[in-house]
Amino acid sequence: MLEALVAELRRAHGAHTVILYGSHARGDATAESDVDVAAFAEVARTLRDARAWHGTFLDGFVYPTAVATAEALDGEMLKLVGGRVLADDRGLAAPLLARLAALEAAAPEPAPEDHRQMLRMWAHKTLARARRGDVEAHYRRHWLLYQLLEDHFTLRGLRYRGPKLALAELRTGAPATYAAFERALAPGAGLDELAALVDVVIGPT
Image (cartoon, rainbow, N blue to C red):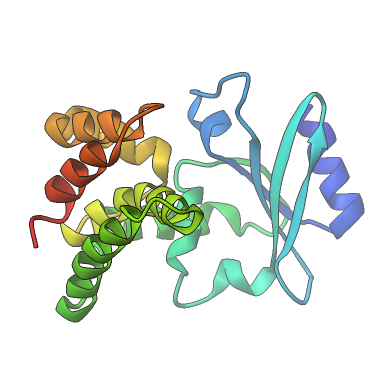
């Protein structure tokens, strides 16, 4: 199937480099997992190739070749760390993955204090607005639940690597915080659980 995928990406986009990443590359994929793939080709801009594929879902990015050799790597590319090379016609994949692994191993650039303060105030402000009980309040409640996971890592100078890996890190490294997320995210959880999570992640006002 992966050979067929490479052939499709070559035919559709002229891909010369293909890297499988995410759960299928790590070996922890489930029946619901997407097939995450990054390809590089002579395209003018980054393209998305998202579709049903062989009974699952393909979530593909097709990047311009220059992205693989850029002097400064975009942090968004860190998702490729640990990826499996499926095609490497130009010898770009191995050096790219090595550079990304070195970037991930380094401590992330800490967020400026003004940005950290904005995150704190936004969380408490959004929690207050979620208490109104109307449809916008419900929306803000879910928005806050979603954002708090990334903010936990940002405020502590840690690298956020997406919800699956982030929750796994919390479960082993910060079990009390993981438990607060578990309570707030449970179906039927109320605003008291959300407020408790804000206090754990952000701190009191």
